[in-house]
Amino acid sequence: MNKSLETMGKEAKAAAKLLRKVKTVDKNQALLAMAEALLDNQTTIMDANIIDINQAIENGLTKPMIERLTLNAERIQGMVDSIKQIASLPDPIGYIEEMKVGEDGIQIGKRRVPLGVIGIIYESRPNVTADAAALCFKSGNAVILRGGKEALASNQAILTALRQGLEKTNIATTSIQLITDPSRQIASEFMQMNTYLDCLIPRGGAGLIQHVLKTATVPVIETGVGNCHLYIDKDADLEMATRILVNAKCDRPSVCNAIETLLVHQGVAETFMPVFAEALKPYQVTVRGDKTTLALMPGSKPATEEDYQTEFLSMTLAVKVVADYEEAVSHIQTYSTGHSEVIVTDSYQCSQDFLDDIDSAAVYINSSSRFTDGGCFGLGGEIGVSTRKLHARGPMGLEALTSYKYIILGNGQIRGTTGNEITH
Image 1 (tube, rainbow, N blue to C red):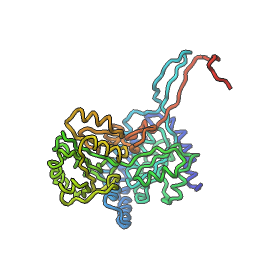
Image 2 (cartoon, rainbow, N blue to C red):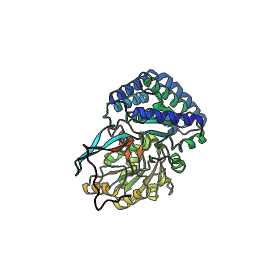
Image 3 (cartoon, rainbow, N blue to C red):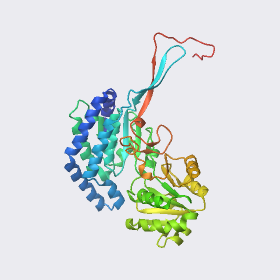
Image 4 (cartoon, rainbow, N blue to C red):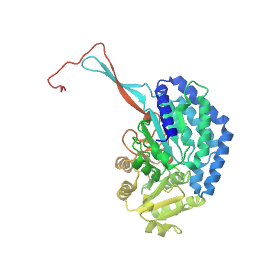
């Protein structure tokens, strides 16, 4: 194993042993110091970000990807606010749940504990550096971060600021570390650091996530690709539907909770299609649709099977006109990645059926999918959006970064041998 990587692992493991015993008040004070350090280093962070952006433009990165990479005063303030909110949240560590008294008078409960050392692999968005570090720190975990090479200067500047904040406390700065070697070899070794990492969380596009799943020997919490759908039912309020569509697609098309496919009931297609086409004009959205869509929307392009499978992360929208609710649900069940799905309808029965029929991390009735976010869900930020059902699902906040251990309180009880007990 690379010596530098091994050193990081050893330091993280040592830091985790100490961090799990740090008092809540001390963690919160450290978080506020980190937030303050981000503001103090705002100019330095934005200067580093300019280096990354210039390099990205030179390397031909797409506009949506550059948008994800970009930092400004508003986004840095957003990172600061997120850290402060995380500091204000209840600390899950040490919380005892399901305390009960057994037949022998012993008390048995489940106590929340940190996972230990968490590895995060992510792309493009440098704000993840601050969010992930703060969430792991508050939940008592040491973290090793590995961002994309396109955001290396930004990530380094953010980490430097966070550690400046930590230096004002008695908590080890090695609680938060960043891999600065962008090589694939180091990334592969990182994914197989079973001796030091307790879990690995990838956050990025389908290519990154699949690569991590195939390469990692460390347990992986999979955060998912967002091939999200919006279905306009025959009983939909079309003004509401237009408003939700514009927000869900055009607000930030480069994020995983943006809509990628629009399904329209044939009963409202002729009325709705020209309306939403006009609403999308200012955003220069490219529509790829089926035959009915092509007929109703001049200028749209024919959709392929691949289009309905794709998370575009850009101003491209796949559209299909469906015969009925059942066809819409069948389409979503076929192509959904299990992230966020939306129905717009005034039918109570149809909305309740949608909640039952769609098995995704977030299912919406008459609301934009853009709310699938840790901050919007009151989690203070998120480490990612899990599209799987094991351990965590949906936006992953503090509790998702913990496990539990059983604690047993007695006063001298011993277990007696019974006829049903198996002994070895």
